[in-house]
Length: 223
Image (cartoon, rainbow, N blue to C red; front, top):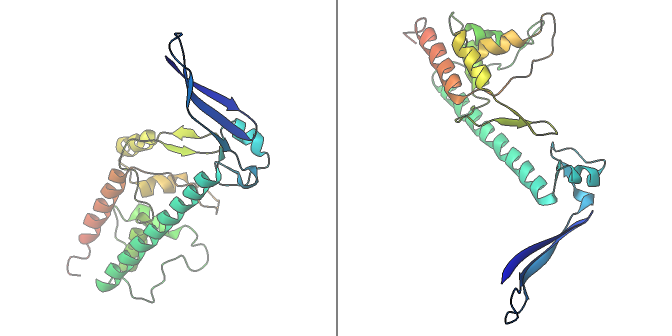
């Protein structure tokens, strides 16, 4: 008896059947199981979360998401946002409790030519004194992303290309840079738009936090 999986690939559905095919006269062929999966193009989306203009073409190229997969992706994004908000609220409470800021303290750039002030403070804080309120802004910035715990790659773009951040980690190590210094270096001279901030390994973010904390302790020992 031979077991065979048959597939019928259509433009709007995939049919399948698992059968036992006889090889001897005393055997009898039979259908083990069969089914069909229809593709709902009206709710079909691209893998980057945008609406698909040509669902059949995107599906054929493997770029699309089924309705269930699309919902799962958005649900995951909502959960990540919720976890970030919880981390931020918890950190703000700790900073207020320990006198770094008050509930009225501004935590964003205010005034002319301050677009990237927090970015510059983050870069500076690892080796120079900054004020308590500025330390709070730096810590809240680091707290935005927790970083990678492993060596897995990040997948970006329509084609799902992998971007290995090992090269970034190597540059930080070779040049004795913090992630904050690295991001500031990415800022184009004379430009106001924020550079694309890459994902860092969590170990690099922890080391950046340690360097900033130890440096600032030198100036605020009695606080």
